[in-house]
Length: 458
Length: 131
Image (cartoon, rainbow over all chains, first blue to last red):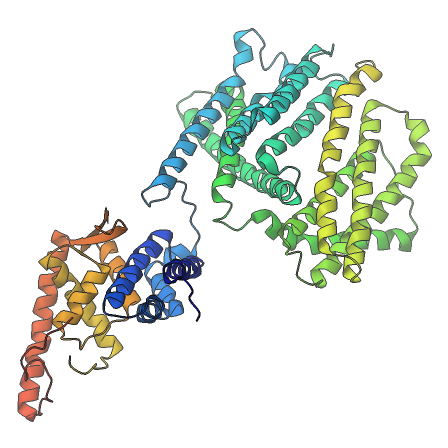
């Protein structure tokens, strides 16, 4: 081993050794620190005895014992560590602990603020049960600015970007509230605004989430991963909340008190919004600790969805049935494309771009292509009858979404097939998906901004 | 220094608890110093694989026999010190009783067999200077 500068090389060697040890799941960072202290003392003693530092290092490492055997011993002693635990506040003392605690306090405060924000309009006489339209249109605005604020604080976003984020939320607030909607969710455009505003604003959250990395494929991919995990955590929290509510209703029923008014006006709205902040924080805290669930579910369900779609197409061909297009068929096929896109996106997000094409990639392509064919059949049938149905705002919005998803999936299929045939790299597909993210938000923004005036606020 | 004797793994595992507890009963200590003390006490005959001490320490900590705390050593590095607890002292007394019983049994049988004790054994030769 050539060692030009012994002092530097010892630090480098210890660094490498530490890195090697850190990869062991059963050996925590506190243990690594303890072992490193031992190693350094051993090296110092051996060096005092006349050994060169690199020799001393080798002897000390050898005396430490085989790392595999050592981590096995650690695993036997700390078997719980093989089940990756989510430690929100690490038990080691020092700076990370302080930071994690500050983080937890900030998140708790933000969640409380989010929960209270939804009750604030009631102070001005806007009640949840009477002004459902107001609450539906503003649902994103109650919590997403706070979530964005959390990431602005966490990622230390500069005032240049911050100005745009604030501007986006202010504009959203103005548009959601100055248009003369009916206010009772009776009109198409009001419902469309309520549905599409959070989608458009989610991109603003993404810019804050990615910090300065929004321009990079990696930054956007992280945001995609974050969104998937957040969805899963949110569903889990909602299930827990459901159980809590059920018990609450049951035990209070026993003493003759009806909790439904409290549930409807406090627990559900406050909990639903606070949970967004809490779930985001959990995803942030656990990202390197627990395996991501979205890719696991994707792996599980991609083959099933592919099989169902292939069977559907096969049956269609075999029986020669026409597609019976009802009024809501377009929305159903939109949702199908969303699910297929989700399956594609989360398997892309978890795949190592360098690994060669495998059987799962073929299944993925079958899924995408069969979804495209199914959607094409549906679009064909809809196109024939669209004049008969008329161009309502709902139908135009759904059609636009269908086109956006179709374009994405069609080009994804092309890129994927190229990759399978060895003519392109997997990174192309990744880049296509991450570059496409703004398209969804732009369409959602168009629906929010342009549809109500164009369609006369119906 | 005496020759390094290969001691059976099971024997090392069984003796590690009383040895570590006894060393910590003398005074609070940390991993490297504990190993140094073991080498000293055994005259270099008991060589533990350094790393293996730590899972033992963590087990004793989990059982409540010892307690750990982080301190900054004179070298400026953070170091994990261990100290024995009242529960650990009780455990040490119990281990002492058991090992004495084992020792007495073995002594009896060695004498009955007139087995020659090889030179270099602590009981046959003056204690070598360890370290």
